[in-house]
Length: 460
Image (cartoon, rainbow, N blue to C red; front, side):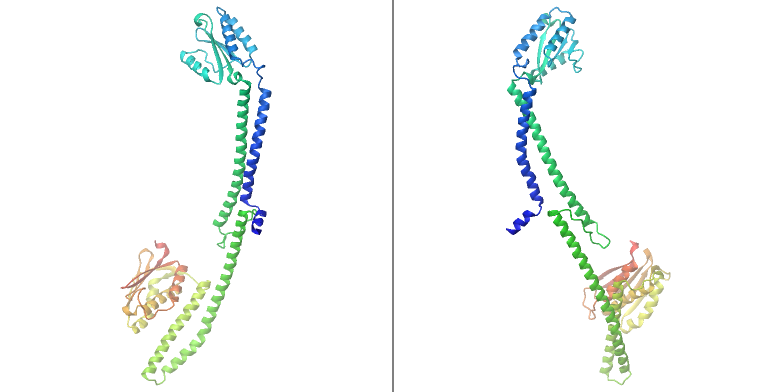
């Protein structure tokens, strides 16, 4: 019950429109009654009564008109015209004209420019048809024997020939219909304005949703009312505030996470260096075969842990945008040849063949050589760890289309099992670096091995 009363107190679009409908239902009958009454009263004042209407008795009109025509037999044209003028003065609401025996229009009172100067038989027939049920009550009488002097016609608005009550009904009905149309048009206009205002508010809200600000989030909108659309605008603004607060919390958490990773990466290096030095000291001591294997295993794991810490630190810097990037014109053939020379011993120790296929001509990319070295190192490290079972890795550079760097292996592929699966942090670093350098990485993998192709973005 409280909710119902609370909804009733709040301005509602539904309640407002219901008020418009109720107002129309109440006002419309009253207004129509007033319009009908007023039209009847005005019609009674304007329309002549039966006793004041000389046009009501059509039989008398016909008899007088034919008597007038008969009196003009053998009359000269001037007499006929004067007779028509006399008739028009007695019956001013009528219109009269005379067409002589030669089918020429000789007189028209009042002057009617729509009447032709010469009457053809076709027009005369059409005139007779129109006179039967037209808006004008028409009487035609011939002058002279067999119409040798032509004919004269008298026309009166047909509603003047109707009974007084019928005339009032016609005028009142016309006024009533006009009033109903005006009131209906008013109701439709108010309804259109009502819904058009709602539409404009919704379109404004839609535009705010589709036009984000510099932060990527829409800007708040001005609340235009306390109705349903206004509450929707308030909810929209509240959603934006929550999203902004969420983004701030996310940015703060990301900043804390990066700071923590950077500190951990830095702090882990010191104990790792101490452990590595002690492992090196143990290698110089007389040990059993098992002891030497253990020391070698410790050294390998220390190398992996050192690489992991370095990747973690690099990933933190890359994510924060603090990893220095200095692009320059770089010969990737020379860079690859230098890097491969450093990786030969590691591949040889793992029992893998490292096959280079580099062109003699230089291939230039505009990039940071240190970043590209890091990318190539990570890809070779990945091949060394996960494709050792294939025993073969190739590095190729193709100079067409801006150049491509290919690293191929015969390992189990991305879907295969690898005994040295890691966190994938190295490949994440590769992806971040390539994106910043404007390079693209394409990978094709299967049971027969994996091929990684690196090329500039604009070579499509």
